[in-house]
Image 1 (cartoon, rainbow, N blue to C red):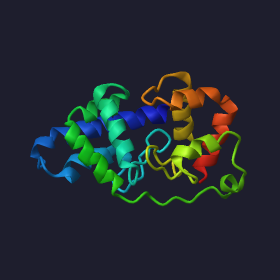
Image 2 (cartoon, one colour):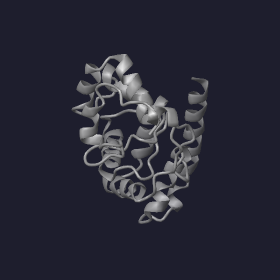
Image 3 (cartoon, helix red, strand yellow):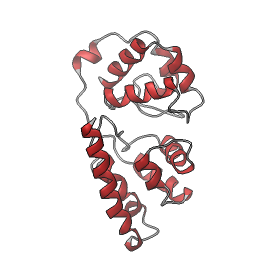
Length: 191
């Protein structure tokens, strides 16, 4: 918990410094606008705390835009993200989403034990949107390559109603037992 607080404090301080320099940035330069994202999400695609911050390099553009839009509108809340995206217009957020979607997903060595394990019960319902190898596709985000801690936190947030910015996910996650969500998160993190 302390590491998470330290990561958030670091991100807030770094973002404040970056935002204060924003007027010096060229307004039409999406790379300059997206630079603030690298403070937490990483300049090379690896987040500073992958247990609490997702990979955005190579993520689905429409998914990224939806999440940015939801932080902007208040449909999804996070102190850091909500404050950061409010500095941008919705067209800026679309450009930023496209910018990160065009990047390459960072390489990760999968956990051989997790990938060799059979798929857990109930996971086939997830593949309809997230695709067979959880690499994402319209309309769903890529999940493979994200950490177990991040995945289980999001699954549980949908299940307990603290994350509600998706019409389908709360119902899917509530229907699963905590053990099923845990097994799915571990399996997907190993891909």
